[in-house]
Length: 318
Image 1 (tube, rainbow, N blue to C red):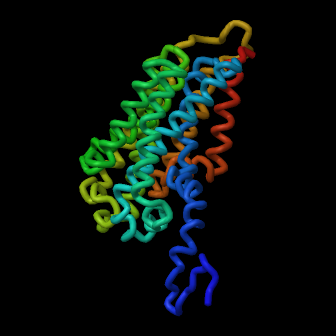
Image 2: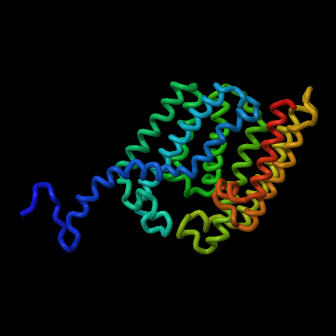
Image 3: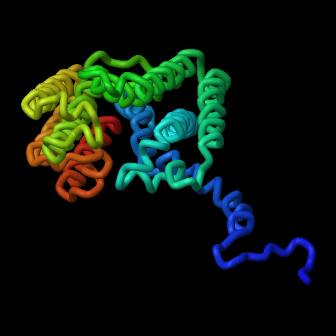
């Protein structure tokens, strides 16, 4: 005789599903967060780019507003990841790496991923309209529409896929300035856009080199692109990004009154050095996710810190 409510397991493990259901429910929030790709959130720090370029980061109100914009863009990006993984769950289960994603692994029900993604997709622009301005909400809405179109169709369209991914980076760089009403320099936008295209095409070039001849097994477009074409794209983008940055740095003219040296103009040196260093990884075919390259290469980190120091001196007017 058994006590009421006790689940008896037979030799085949019957009843295990009922026993583990509460555990799965408790683990669901953590699994949803993993589906939202926390490692990718570093990309959303690009919302700081425009206010930093304008020298506005010393204002506590600006920093608080940027923290809010960062959270809003993170929510919008999370919505895209959740719906993308829900849509691709079946295909991901057949992939050696993607099968470990929470939705594909069964840790997050497909319906829950769709529902959470839809809620975040509605709340992010709505909160932006209420706490920032209508233009910020419009940018977030455009980002969501474009990314959902990418998940459904555009990632299979030659060249357009590169443009869409690049636009996502550019929108991040624009949103911080738009939310704070900071005018965006044309050279700043060109630098951000072509800098993003450089990293995106370098990553795709590296993927194409590694998966040459078997691209269709992972990303169908890898077989459609040639490595020569992708190499041309990242080299072109690198050249335009360096030229645009130099034009942006020279907009201020010579030495700012009260400064010891033209720090803004001198920042062209580490910026160009960073592009050249990143190009080494692109040329080798080892330029994976941009955040991985930047965070794991010590020389690139030192160059980046040098650029930050020079630009901080320019903003401070020392």
